[in-house]
Each structure stands twice: as structure tokens, then as C-alpha cells.
Amino acid sequence: MMALWCPDWPAVAAATEIGLGRMAPLAVMSANRVLACNAVARVEGVRRGMRRRDAQARCPQLVVVPANPERDVRLFEPMLAVVESLRPGVAPLRPGLMALPIVARGYHGTEDQAAAIFTEKLVAHGVWDVRAGIADEVHTAEQAARRATVQECVVVPPGGSAEFWSGLPVDVLADIGSGGELVGLLRRLGMTRVGEFLALPTDAVVARFGGHGRAVHQLLRGRMQPAWAPRTPPPERACDIEFEPGLTSSEAVGFSVRQTAEQFVAGLAADHLVCVELHLEVETDRETILSRGWAHTTWFDTADLVDRVRWQLESAAREQLFDGPITRVRFEPVAVEPTSAHAEALWGSSSDERVDRGVAKIQSLLGHEAVVRPVLQGGRGAADRQHLVPWGERVTPRTGQIRATDQPWPGSMPDPAPTRVFPSPVAAAVVDETGAGVALTERGFLTGDPARFRIAQDRWQHVTAWAGPWPVDERWWVEDEAAGLVARCQLVGEAGRAWVLRCAASGWVVEASYD
Image (cartoon, rainbow, N blue to C red; front, side):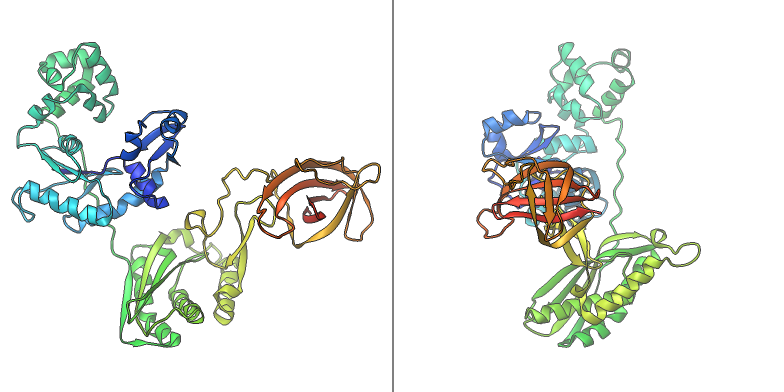
């Protein structure tokens, strides 16, 4: 068995996602403690399990990233595909560690030559630190990989697993199942090497350490093989079509890709799947690739795919991005869902589906960006939290199209959010009990308690309740009424309607209301 190990994988995945170089110190935090860190951070004294405060004290320039198991698995998936292109039967043990069976002096040569081929392939993929270990069992191969240097391989001779384990400290047993308790017990008994544990007879191990100790004892002696299962590579669902000679008209390309679009939809339907998010690539004869992600409120059928091709070509033509005729179009599913999740209701299609078809028809006539819908994003003001996107597209903070809503956003108003946000702020006036205008001080406080307010030229209303202010100082470099130091307040008028008012140096305006 061969084990391929990428040390500090959570840190490697985090650095890859944020585009951080290898020479910058980085640590992945979980529960305010270091879960993993890269080699540069370790040189500065950062260690696993260290508190965040202590880690930043030792390395002030440390980049801190929260733990994200989904990110670790997602970025490890391409590495599995790279290894599967050389040898099927790869078993992912955990993100950053995989195992696969090899044959000595087989297709890839000797064990060392095979390890060199696999590590070189992964380094070319972009993972710099890859280490390999080869042994009779998976767990022994993993420990051998941990003893290897960067891009090197440690080979345990056949039948030499017990001898290999004998020279290791007992701390390595913590990596085998729930071996942490076993390590502590062995240390209390005065054992420092695994060989001392292996020298014990089986009966004594069972009597002193129980069933778990016996399982570890047999495992290290090579008499047991832990369960592992190679994964089944995901089927290739992408479809593409090439044109020779290239096509210059979007209508011609749309007509020509229909059969490929039908093949794409039918391939997913054969596995009872539908595509809800799509990656579309268009390539010119000068090898210029124009790619874009598309999403659907329900799922893509053949007509939807053809429309997306045409919309993408028309958008690129308006922006003058083409440098030649179209020679290739590729459909690649990004997210698929079971067909049962989009099955028709008991009494037929719902009204939402008819709305989607109607909107899609309008988009086909007026253009993709002619119909938009609001989505919620992070921000401090009510208007800042709205972002208009074309109908049918899915936007997430991960793609950088909208701001994340789970950030602190100091200065923002607490929930509930207003039900109506005005396109343009409406002028207002607020006075205190003496009739003097209420203004905003340099420290973000009001000069008095609001007693009456007026919106535009309407009559004055008495304030029955109010909350705030929530000051915020942002975008001071922009010449805008909402820039600089402003404060927002919630006011309830005598009619029972609540309003969101913003106070700045230029005066009061109404931003939103609670209908």
C-alpha cells in the first residue's frame, strides 16, 4: 500500500482559497485554538493547540483563518482526481491523506519510482509538500509517509511492519483510532517505545489493556488490516462540441449546440439527476476561453441551456471580448440534485414553475440582465443590504459577488429588518421637546431626544417611541451624503408606523419604513 500525505492540509486548503503564498505564516483556528498551521508559522513558534492570543504574540503577522471542513474536502477532491488519472482505486482516508494499492516493479516501476511519479504529479497540480510511504498495511504506510521528507518516500520492506513500529515513540499510537488513552497508560507504565508494547504477550495485553489494546497490538504486528475502501470516481458528466470551421453568429452556435444540450440533460436524467448550477465555456479559434457560471431557480432543460449559450455570446459581443470565431462550447455541471426534489406536485405543476417559464421568456426577448431580483447581503444601511442580480442566478459570498451576512457589521441596526426600502432617501426633520433641531455630534451622539418629526412636507408627528442612534463612520473619502459619520435611528410615529431615519451633517432623511 502507498500512502500520500500532504502535511497541514487545513492550512494548505485555506491558503489556496484566499490566494496566500507559501511564504506567509497562516494558522487555521477552531474554538480559538490552532487546529493547523504551515511551516512558516511553525518557524515563528506557532504550534497546534496553542491559543490564538499566544500564537499572534509569537507571530504578529500571522494570518488567521477559521476552520472549514467543507473547504478541506472540496479542495482535496481535485487531488484525488489527479491520482486517479494515474492509478484507479484511491481511498481518501481524510482530507490531506489518501491510500492506494501498488504493485512492486509494475506499470510504474519500483516502489520509489512509483512514489516519485505520484508526488511529481501532485506537485505539478500545485501542492508543494507531498510525502509518500509504502508498506504492507495502510496505517504503516501512513506512518512511513510521516517520516519522509518533502517530496520523498519511505519504504518499509515486506514483512517489516513490526520492526518499523518498534523504533517509534508511543505517541504515534494516538493516530490509530482512539489511541490517546492508550498512549497515556503506556507512559505511566514507563514505556517510551512502541517496541516495548509489541514485546508484551497477547494474553498480558488483553488482561491489562482490554479489547482496544489487543486490536492495536495485532494491528501493529501485521495480523490485522484496517478497513479501507477505494472510492468510485464520479462519472464524467460534462459535454462539449467543437465546430470546424468556427461559427461567428450566436444564432448559429445556439442552433448547433442543441443536440449536445439534449445529450447533457439526458445523461443526467439517466442517473435521475438534474442540473441546477452550470459552468459554461466558449472558446474561440485563438484559444481564448470565455467562461461563466449560471444557476437556475429550478433546473436546466435543453431550451434553458441553449438560451444561456446565446445570452453569454451576446453579452460577450457587446463587451467586444471575442477575438475570432467560436470553435468549442462546453457544458459542465457545478451542482446537481435528484430528480425527485423537482418532481411535479400531486395536482400538476405549481404556479411558481409557470412564473419561471414566463420570466425566462421575457429574458429571451429582452436579455438576461433585463429581469432582476433582490438578494440579501451584508451591510449597515437598509439600502446597502440589497443587491440586484439577474433572475435565475445564484450568488454567494464565496464567489465575491455579494457581501457575507454573517459578519459583525458594527453600526448596523438590529433585527427585524424594515419591510420597505425607499429607492431614494426622503428628506425629513426631527426636533426635540423645545422645538430645536436634533443633530449629530462628532462622537456619534444626538444633541437631544427626538420628540417630533416630519417627513418631506407632511404634518409633524409626535414620537411615541424611538431607538438608537447606531453611528457608523465609513467611506469618508467619497463625496456622498451617506459617507462619513452618520447615525441611524428607529422612530415610531403617533399613527403607529415605524421609520428608519439617517442623520448626517447635511440633515435627516428617511431610508426605510416598517409597514
